Every structure is written in structure tokens, then in C-alpha cells.
Amino acid sequence: MKLSRKLILAGMVLAGTAFAQTEQWLEYHTSAEGRAYHQMELTTNPPPGVALPKLNAPPYFARWSTPMDPAGGRWLCFDRTRKSGPYDRLYIDSNGNGRLDDKTPIQARLDSYFAFFPPAPVVFKGEDGPITYHLVFRFYQYEKSPAQLLASSAGWYEGVVNFDGVKKRIQLIDGNVNGTFNDVAPDPYDSDRVQVEGDKTGERFLGKMLEVDGKLFRIEAARDGAFVKVQKVPPGGITLGQVRVPENISEFAAFGGNGHFVRQPVNGEFTLPAGNYRIFRWTINRKDEKGAAWTLSGYNFPKTAGFEVAADKTAVLEIGEPVQAVLKATENPNRQVAFNLSFVGQQKESIEMLRDGQRPRGPKLMLANADGTLCYTNTFEFG
Image (tube, rainbow, N blue to C red; front, top):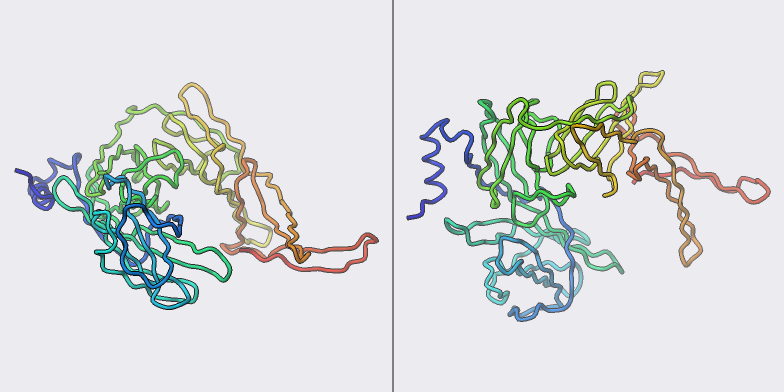
């Protein structure tokens, strides 16, 4: 006889701390606001072998990929109730029977070029019965531009977890919007995320380990998100390696299979569990002569910004200053020239500069003709 998850949860509550380091169960929550986002590909080609409903307009189709479905995904169809404007009606294969003609359409809320759909439930077959997951879709199309579709995970798991005697509320988030909650990948944005009560970092990408109040825990999440397992790593329980960065780096973050770690280097040095990582972010904090607080940060690192941490060798990272200003000029068919100014770091990462938490005034652009006569001046706008 199979017990339901609710009965198992009730039994665990009665058992008290005996199960503290095994399965700790979480509750499913939903919201009309997405917790993570994924751009989906739209097509006008009908999916083969899928029965379609009666439609009012030439439809758009998309396939949401998920390992929770034996077929590998679910088809969507977008229709509209008016002759023009955004597509505001959604048919989704919510039960995985390969049909769309037997589904009740979901109606969107319209706003200019956007159609906002309420959370759409999809149901999977689980070991103990059906598992429900929710998606939020945003369909939009600007004038003379291709239609686009953004999918968001509208459901997450949340509950109180015992971390070595300290209870913390956590949230487990489907970061790559594929219906599962235990994905760990080399690219952080292909991984799921976890948020722990009191963690100043906010959401962390899911890995094999998780830092809570300065302590290191092994963490394992259920594929469907219903529970997590955590176990404290004892002193000396893992191999650590030394990392060195420039001494003016105030904060450093890296992600890898081991997890998402944030460090405040001391004299440019800190340790990480041995393994492979990608630089995620660095920050330099300074104050000028007037007392204004300036922050220089590097983010959006390419895949080449990887490094290895080992016990027998210090990983030396070339990050921080100097950064480069890159000016690009693009001419359109009407002979109008657009200028773009950006800042990049040593690893080709993007650079953000803030003054007292705000973006400073943009630099000026001055154009002159060949004899040096000033003919045009303007100020760059951020965005």
C-alpha cells in the first residue's frame, strides 16, 4: 500500500527530530507573478498529430519542454478573440493527453502590446498520485516585430527546514522553468534556486552544498520539489582550496556544481570547496573625497570565466580594475547613426557603476567634423 505525501508528512511531524536530516517536506505555493523566466520559441506550424480546437485566427504554437512528461513536453496554442492585436487566448495540454481540442481556453488580460495569462496548471503523474505545476505566460508583439513568448514558473515549494538545530524557512524555485526543482548545471541560469530565511545574498543557485549562517550543508532536493534533505558538513569533511583576487575586491561570488558561494576576501584571499566554478560577480566599494559611496561591479560573465579550486594550488583570478569603455556606432539604412557606450571587464563581463546606489549621470558624446569644428553634443542615457 502506498501512503500519500500528506500522510507521510504528518508522520514525520509526530516523529520529531528523528527525521531532521532525512526528508524535510515543503508546501506548494502559487502566484500570478513568475519566480523565474524562460524565453520560448513560437511557430506557426501546427504540431504533428495534435488535435486542435476551433480557432478564430491563424494560430501560434509553442512547446514547453519538461522532463516530468514522458513525451518530453506539452504543446500550447495561442488564438485571439479579436481581428487584430495581441493573442489573448491560450490552449495548453494540461493533462498530457496529446490533445488541445478538449481543453478550456485561458483568457488573458490585455495591456497595449502584451497579453498576460493567469497561472495555467499542468498535471504530471507522480509516484503517489498527480503532481500539479503552474506556469504564467506573457505573449507580446510590437508593431512590425515578431511575436514573442515568455514563460514563468508560477509555483514554488516553501517550508521550515532544520539546519543543525536551527530552523529556517526556505523557498525552492524552478529556476530554469522546466517543471523540476533539483537541476544543477554548469551554467547558473540552467540551475534551480533556493532562498533561505535571513540570507543576505537572497536567492542562491542550487548546488550540492549550501551555506547557512556560515555553516556548510549538503543539500538534496526532490525532483518534484516536495522535500529537501540537508546534512551538516563536519569540520574537515570536505577539501578546501585557496583563491586569490586583487586586494581591492570587496565581495566575490562564484557558482559551480558545489553551489553558489559569496565571499568577502581578506587581503584578497579566501577559500572555497575544491571543484570547478564560474565567476558570477565581483564588487569594489569606495568613497570619494565628498563622502559619496561608489560601487563598481562585474556581472554576466561568459562561459570562459571558469576556474578550478584545488587543495594543492592557489587559484589566481584576474578580475576588477581596469575596466574598458567600448564605443560602438551603427548606421541604419536611413543613414542615421546610433552610438552605444558600454563598459567591460577583464573577463569580457558587463560592468555596472553606481553612486550612492544610483546610476550616475551619463557621459557626454561630442562629434566634430574634420577641421575640429564642434557640430553636435549629446548625453548618453542608461538602459
